Structure formats: structure tokens, C-alpha cells
Length: 275
Image (cartoon, helix red, strand yellow):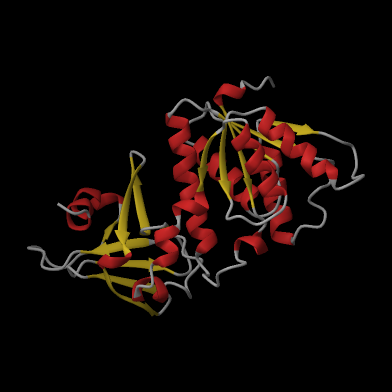
């Protein structure tokens, strides 16, 4: 496929172990996943519709999955996977191999720069291709030396419109609230997404609905369900075993009932968002 670089965003960022090198936060990858999705959507709204991923384990795979998620709604989005050589995923973990192959099969186009591995310089040549065929970048970079720094700096020199997810998370890293700490054992919740402000529990018309850490008074696991109680008494209950997520409104005129999150969006919005 022909790539219009003026409408193309590329990704660069650390591998999984490098993302965690300065923190033990068990939800960090979940937060990054949500923020990448929100940033991809922002670029799409600015007219960018093609996204390049180099397919490295860690940030590249997270970013590619975010594009595929948004593509379910916006079908004109194009995802291009650029491999430095055939078989780059062979030394990945089993989980990352599955993710790589899932993305490869669903990408709108694939670019393979070499038939086989010959030298480490192939990764830099792949990164050059990413920068040379785009004018914008989403990255996860905090100053570590390596291929991410090389790609980040080269994009900066080329004048790319760049957003650094790591830089967006300053307040998240600094947040030491009890609620944030209480969520640490629950990194695999399916009913909502962790984000830099707290938890994102629903999208309606692509507008996020967020419960900030500061709004949460209690987090407790009971019988396979995570109970999240807000300071105003509203309670969110998310299954630890499925994507079920329900809310309870205290003080209702009618008998206490359970409603799905999607069925009571307006009530949630009024109770959660500041006036």
C-alpha cells in the first residue's frame, strides 16, 4: 500500500521489562494501554489515519492493539506492521508471540525489510523506515539509551508532531492515594480500564467516563467481585472473572436495583463528573 506520510503516525517505546524498570506498579501497562488508545484517537481526529508499528514486544504491541481497537469503530484507519526481518518474534514470550501474530494477521499491510536476521543494525534501519514514512509519533520514552532514544531523537530532528505517553503520566506516578494502592492486586479487570486519572468505566459516543482515584473511598474484593465505593455512596461492582460491571445507586425512590453501566450512563455521568 502507498503510505501518505503527512497522515501517518509511528510508534516507538520500550520493551516490557524496560517499561517497568523504575516502578513496581502492577497496573502501569494497563494505564499505558488506555492512554495510547486515547492518544491514537486524538491523532485520528486531527486527520491521521495510518499508523506504523515496528512490532517489538512491549510498547509496539500495546500501540498496535490500540489501533485495532479503534479501527472497529473507524474502519478507514490503516495499521501497517514493519518488520526488520522475517521471524523477529521468535524469541518473544509465548504471550507476546500470540499478540504479534494476532496483529500481523489483522494489519492492513505488512512491510518486511529483510528475509533473515543478519545484524543488530536491522532494527535501526527498521526505525529509520518508521520515521521516514511518518510526520507524527506516539512514544514511551524517559531518557534511557537505546533504540527508542535513537528513534525518538531522529523524529524530533525531523520535526515530527510527537506525544510522549511517559511524560503524560507524571501525576499518575506521583499519586500515592490509598485507592491507587488498593487496585494493585487487580491488574486483570475486564469490566473497566485503568487510566492516568483513575478508572475509565465506560465509553458512550467515544466519550470517556472516569472515576478519579480521589473520588474512591473503598476498594474491596468479595466472592469474585471487586466492590468500588465512591465518597458519595455510589458503588461499582466489577467481576474478577468476566467483563460484567454493574452499578448501584443508593437512596433511589424505587427499591434498590442493579443496572448495567451502559443502561444508566446519564445517571452515572451526573453522579461522577464534577458539576
